[in-house]
Length: 307
Image (cartoon, rainbow, N blue to C red; front, side):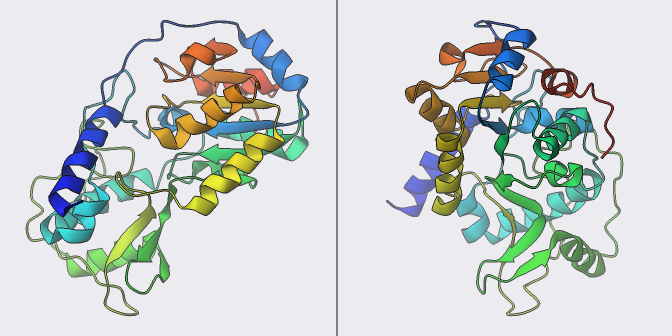
C-alpha cells in the first residue's frame, strides 16, 4: 500500500473513531446488580477510557461536551516534518497543563480495590489512557495499552527519556514562546495536543543520544498496539470472570476487542459510560453514570480515600 493510500485509510479510521457523541439508549440493570456480579466473581478485569479522567479536568474526544478534533496520524508524524513541528508546538503547551492533573475519586477507588482485594480480587487494570493518573493513584497491576505520555522515545535509537526533560529542552530552544497556562476545552485535547495558532517557528529538539527523532511514547492513530501488550491484556481477560468497562465508548477496536472476547466466552460485561458504546448490545449491566461518582459506590469505598 502506498503512503498516500495509508494516509487515506488512516484518516477514514480517525473520522470514525472521533465521531460525535451519541446518547445511551440501551441501558439495563443498576449499581446493585453490578456490585453483586463483582462481589461474586473470583476475579475482575477493568478496562478504562478517557471518561475516567474527565473528572480530573482531562478532556475526551467523544464526550457530550467534547470539541470535534482530528488527532495527528503516526504516518504524518513520522514522515511530515511540518506536521511533526506543529504537533510538538501544540504538545508543548498542552502537556504543561495536563501534567498537573490529579487522580479523582474513581481512580482512587480502583487503586484501593486492587490493594485490598475487596469486594473481589482485581486481576488487572487495562487502560486506554496515557495521562498517568492510574499510576499516580497507586495502581500497580496496570497495563497502559496506548503507552504513557510521561515518556518520550527516540524512533532511531529506541532510548527513552522523561517527558519533563523534553519540556525543558523545548523551552531552552524556544525562549520567546509564551506558555498558556489556562487552556480551555476548545484548545486542549486528551493526548495533550493543544490548539496553537503560531507554531511555524517552533524548534524541536533531536534525541540527545543519537540526534534522531523523538516521539511521545504513546500510540498514535494508525500505529499498532504492541502485540505483547495485547496478549497480556487477553491473558487477564481469560483469568477473570467479569469485565468492568469504565469511561470508554469502545469506539476503537483496541478496547472493543476485550469486551467482545469476554462476551464470546460467556462472561458478564459491565459498562459504565456517559453515552453509547459499541458493546451496549451485549452488556450484562449497562449504566449511564459518572465514573467519579459511581465507582467508589460500586466497590464500597465511598470516594473518601486519599491514597
